[in-house]
Length: 419
Image (cartoon, rainbow, N blue to C red; front, top):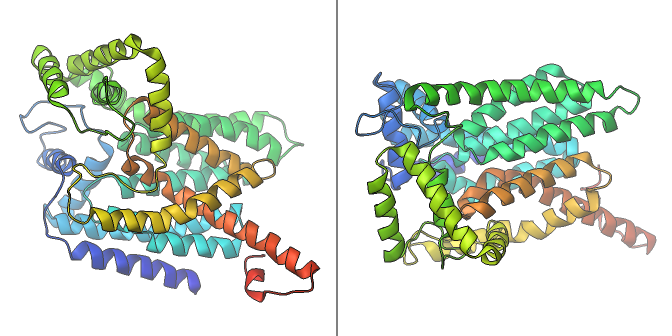
C-alpha cells in the first residue's frame, strides 16, 4: 500500500512538472537527439541533419524517442509523459534493490526519496537521456544482485542485454559494467561458498556476452557505414580535448574561451569527417596532457571530485532559476551524501552490494575525471546514492536505538528502521 502511494506520488509530481513546461526542446543536445529520432522514424536511418550517416551521438536515447514519436507524432509532451512514467518505475526498482541490500523499511524510505528527488523530477522534463539511463542502470543492478543471490542465469542474460542498451545510451557506463562482471564472479563465490567458482564464471560470461552483442552490433554498423569500428559514439575526442585544454578547471564543463573556440574551429576545418575529427581531438588532447602531466593528474582528481559536488553548475552563470536549483540540490543530494558515504564505509566488509555500488561510483568518477565533469553526468547513478543514503540512515538509526535502549531510554520512531 505504501509503495503504491509512493509510485503514484512520483508519477504525479513528474507529470505536474513536465506538463507545466512549454512544448519545446530547450537544449541543443535534446534537439540533436530529436532530429536523429525523426530520421530513424522517417526511414532514412541514423543520419545527421545534413543527411549523412553519423555516429556522433549514442543511439540509445534517439531509439526511445523514435518509438515515442511513432505512437504520438513528434510530441515533446509525449516524451515528457513517458519519462514521467519511467521515473515512477525507477521508484519500484529502487525499492526492489534496497529491499535486498538494506531491508524492507529502509527500502520504502529510498523509494520515497526517489519519488521526490528534485533533480530526477527535473530530468523527467528534459529531452535528455538521464531518466532512461537511470532506469537502465538500476535495472542492471537489480538483475545482477538477483543473479548472484539465486544463481539465476536468465537474470544475468537480461542484465547483459540492458547493460548493452545502457552503454548505447551513454558510453560512460561501459567501464562500470565491466567491473560489474568482475563483481559477479567474486560475489557468486562468496554468496555460495560451497559451490564451484565455475558458477561465478558462468554468470559473468552470461552477463558479458549479450552486453557485447548489443554494443558490437552497433560497432559493426559503424564500421560498415562510417568506415571505422567506432565502439559507441564519435564525440569522446572532443570531450577529452575539452576537459584537458590548458587553463580549464574541474567545473569549466563545455564553456570555451576564444582561444579554445579558435583551436576547435581549426581542428574541425582540417577534419570534416566526424571520425577523423574525433581522432584529431584525441591527438590534440593528448598533446595538452603530455605538455604538463602533473597538471593532468591534479585536474583529473579535481574532476572526479567535481562529479560529486553538492549543486549543479549551469551552462551560463546567469541562467534564471539557478539559485533555486542549487538550493534544491543541496537540500536533497547534499543532505543524503554523508549518509550514503557512511553506509558504504560501514557495510563494505559485510555487504557485497556495498562493494558493487562502490565499484560503480568509482568507475563513473574515473571516466569523467578523464573527460569533462558535470553534475548531470552523475544523475543516472543518483538512485544508487539514494539507496546507500537510506541504508546509512537506517544503520545510524539502528545504532542510536540500541544505544538508547542500553540507557533505558526509548525513542520508538528509531525502531521503525530496524527490520
